Length: 400
Image (tube, rainbow, N blue to C red; front, side, top):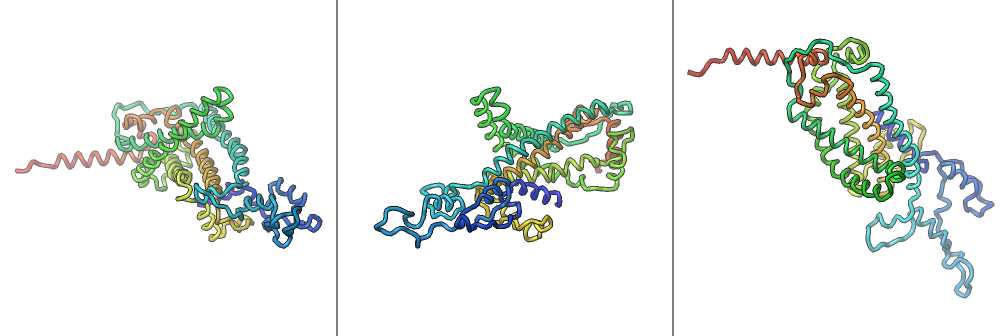
């Protein structure tokens, strides 16, 4: 929970207009109350500026008389109008679009755009490329994890058909969501310059369609996997031994494990928690007006006192729909990058990283030698159940 809260706060810090503490109010007497050079420089540095002095729009008492054609008519000028629009204080009526169409100026969009095209693109890409690079180095140093014992030729059922179906639904949908999300994120920078803007436009249009619809398959599979495997993924004492021996990945020891070892449990809970968070933020993006996410989350954090732990002012609990979508999109992308890195490591172990691992989700059956090396406690349980079933069958007598 603390990690999730830290990520929320780290995300919010990326939007300096709301996360930084206000600087001391400068002396504006020389400008007649208007903003000063110091205000402008502080805003350019990303500091929060108290804009309350700019939210007084118009002065009817200073309006020019009816016979005077010069001066500010009606006590309000064009700058007053644009400031009122910026601070959402203008009296606007629209013929279509509802309340969201009344927001004509929303400067938080620039902070979101700069975060998305800057830190998110840079560090997200480095995370994925760095993960792939480290796995390549590990493979060169360690090689493939082989089965130490000779294959017995006897197999044991590792996963039933419905389990494999849910796994491949989850895996396939996540891969599609990952690639289409990366196309949308990096298409303008790395696809359009080389393959053309028309190709990129068609690709992104298709990616958007696939992303929005395959998401439902991902969420369904996530629920299926949770209810089928959650009982096998609670921590137990054998996990400590697994960690102490590095899971047999480093060295030659192969610690005992039940159906899922400690490493697989970490993968499971990462998929459930991070995948669940991605799903919730995705639903908020699909239905931004029906399912706002961050205003309610910030209210909870304020009630708990989390901002005070970091010396911050309370987080805003009234957000425009555009702000909700910007925060939800940024959070959606951050968590997706983290989960993609984890899944890349999972794919490595389940394919070229470990001999015989793919069979568990391929045919659903594994050789007893593989099961004994990686999941000895689980194999003992399976054999005990088979012996009990055989004994019960042998004792049964036909009805007279």
